Image 1: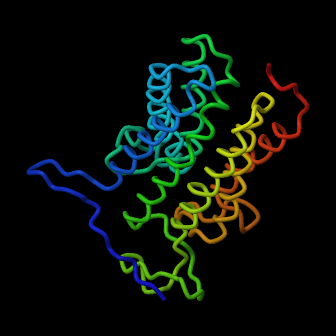
Image 2: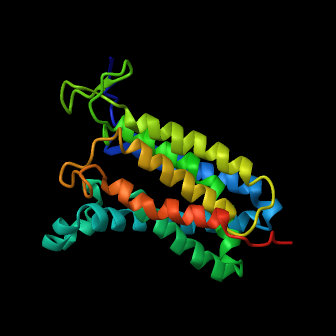
Length: 258
């Protein structure tokens, strides 16, 4: 049995200014996307200025979509009772699925502005996203949030601020799966020219499948618990369309672009 290390969520305190680990993880996410995007730029017809513009649109989409998705997907009844919840970002709460929708909206905006085809931008973006997802899960772990269900496995971890039970360190599972493994799969797959949206399809399927798997080890949201069949969580329900769309995009027959 392991003990949660109880890391101070504040990395550096500079007078009245506090630099939090979670903020550093966001910077790492966007910084890694910019670096990886610049590595792929010339091969895919993007300039470095366009990559910077794309990361900006993506960052706006992640923040706005992530917050809106969290409120609508996880706190809808509370939002109806108190609409100001939408802007109370200091209370925490972001949704990957909402952030994904926000990124898609940002890609549409960027593609129209720079005269790219939508699929070109989506397939360019997909391989540079997972490292940032992994950074976000590391931030979840450092913050001691989104802990797992009780377990008797030897690597079970006690989160003292939760209870005295050994639990799955599910944040680290997601770091390994959606951060490291998904990055390796999509990056290697995208090294060759693929049919339109095939790379995006692998990302959607890969993320959706691992999220559905890890949710069996992750503690369901207390106010939602199971949302279907007495076992399905909200995260699994939201990931189902990703899996279905990913399978469709991988199997549909389209020509490889010239």
